Image (tube, rainbow, N blue to C red; front, side, top):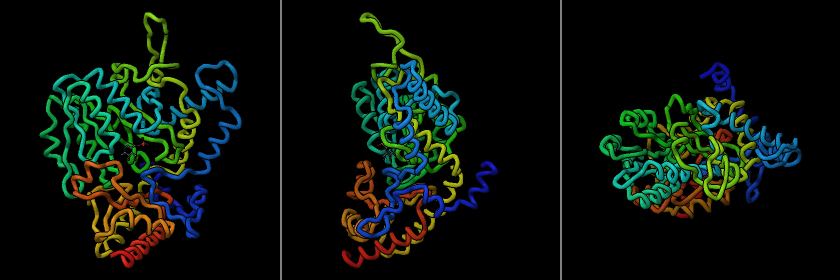
Length: 415
Ligand code: PLP
């Protein structure tokens, strides 16, 4: 933690910070919006909105291909955004940062491309029971193609990985471990450092799905020694349609291209095509320029606020929410991990999550209900879905109090 972060930690003024997000002034059914659906997507600060407007108003042009001024400006801004991402996660090289459409796209890229190069009959891919569908299905597809097997690290009743099972499953047959850093449903923060160390002791690379970690936890990919990491711009105050795949140079260079098209080639003839160097080898076609540049602005916003300060404020708020929710008699938490971030999932009595969600919505409170794209996890807990409140730095204790009141109202109506 730097000194400036320490100062921010004690001085982060949430009411002032909320003014950066115009949508937070919105009324829903005449009530002030309480937005607790941040794991699905976060709201955007003015600086990001202005950045997008500036791009389209003043220098919209296709990147990498033009000699004219606007194209050079767009290219500079796009490459500048790549540098910001690299610095934010402390990648060793800018070219280890691949712009994608989002976490889903990043994981599909690795599953397909790494799988084609490194998987063969009898190999195994190790994931966990708490993965989002986007870190399950791409691996199922490639395992089917390559005759490989998908192995699953189970979770215990608290929603934590059973590490003895991880140790048992981490055999020489495993060619990659793909794991979520933070569970989007349970809020569990997984012991990824320990997992990476154990996998590396057997020369097995690890992909981290950081979709729910990047906006809550400071991440240094070199220090963690992650081999791949995927995340989405829209979940970290940036625009939709853009995301990142971080990959170590040695793996990215060894993997074949994922998609073919413009920009990813060095030379094309009908007889043979040669491929561009990193990162362009994995960026076929016109990229989401405004999305990437907007993500750069979102990273500026996080850096100015201080990721440590954000983490500290959110941890305090989650602890408060957890305490307040604990006092509701018929409420049970789904997931009770010791180390959590971002989200709290729960059920109240026998109230169906959808009914709870609708009653809260009428009070201006946005939560998400359902399986949260983690159906195997729902099966593990023998439930159809949960109510999930997920938090961001702009949320307040008053908003948590509104949630508690809303739940009490639902209890009176439905229990
Ligand atoms: N992984 C996790 C843990 C997620 O929470 C999500 C989205 O909720 C994804 C992957 C997919 O992200 P995206 O839809 O932005 O590609």
